[in-house]
Image 1 (cartoon, one colour):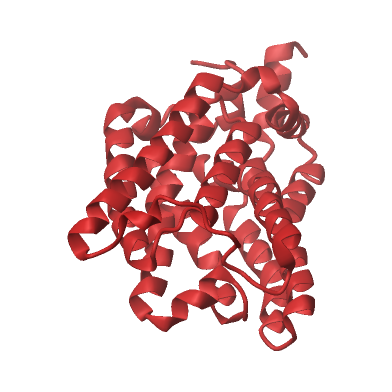
Image 2: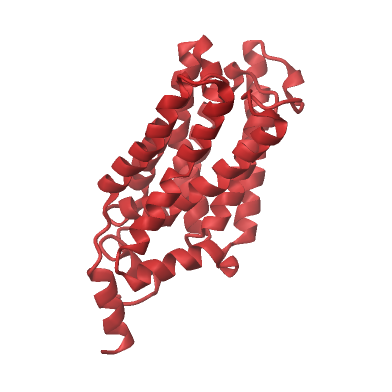
Length: 289
């Protein structure tokens, strides 16, 4: 059997299972997050961190037991393939998010908000774990989440449809995955409960962000590292820039506009179906017929 036949055998013998993945990712996250609602903040923080690991663990297990050598190789390359990262694209994405924040704050002035938002906050938005614990949580969330979401999840959806619809579905499910956090004392999400509109905005905002993070992922040839860097920067800025909840509602509108522009400027990326049914094949440039 030649190399091309081996690629065909390895890719066609594996079927992605996105429904099962999300069912298990939700299950093994929420069985820790839901109890965290009823315990003290310190124990709750531990349970939240454990739950945060679930998508990465489920993703790694799915790949490990797949019996597919290319899938395993692909995960390894996506994790440690520094040469795959398009650093200019990552820099553009980071600068773009800075622009989103600046535009959001300036637009919020029309609604009575203050220029004082152009400042760093002293603390993080969630309590009970201290500054070091909060910084650790932000970092772990950025790094570990992407192992799960990009290690298996997004590809498992994208293998069956174009990246536009994949981004829509992923953004929605990723956003809803955070649901128990609004009931856990001391989290950023629980602080939004003072106004239902803030909560609704939080969940809506995940959808356009799903498009942007998919763009970062694909623009760096499906690099997990690129997504980790971008996710960490976004999390840090969302925590440390003194934007009000009202301004974050404005920010969602700005993010949606930016996501729409990205899709329009990258139509081939988002609407091509060349990869559907043979994601690993097209990844390795094999079997174009």
